[in-house]
Length: 206
Image (cartoon, rainbow, N blue to C red; front, side, top):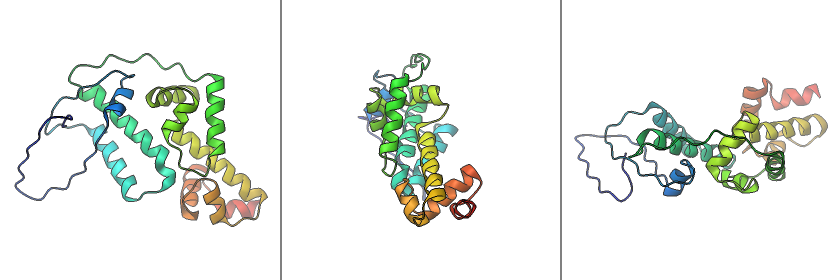
């Protein structure tokens, strides 16, 4: 764990495979309700949750798909929150309990998701629609819906894809792209995991 602005010198005796993740001060502040954060310097730290989040980010980066943008933002926010919670030089004050989005905020966010269903949709844009910081938005959105923004957006995309497959004749690959999936196989994997079926089976069933 190497805080910004501090020198680092490491001597290796052999080959080492590493994953490096760099978080901005802004990301750390957002995870701490806008307050500045100073991380502690720590070599050899063990943090299983941070490790899994970093590996998840590395996996998405290696197999990048534009539709994963919201998911990446969510992972980065979770990593920043874990660093603030476990690795801040001074203990972070606990944030106030999430109160959830207002009906007006939730409607604005859902409308933005529906308008840009086929696009990569960053958390920052969703937060702006609710006039919140990214960290506030993510907590309050989950408090209101029981889901992360990524999970909610995926459900909307699948809902639209099912509607198009049942009522239209567009090729499955075209349906996938118009609903925010990278390609037909991406839609098939998501539909099988979430709904237990496939686009072809859904179309045959009408």
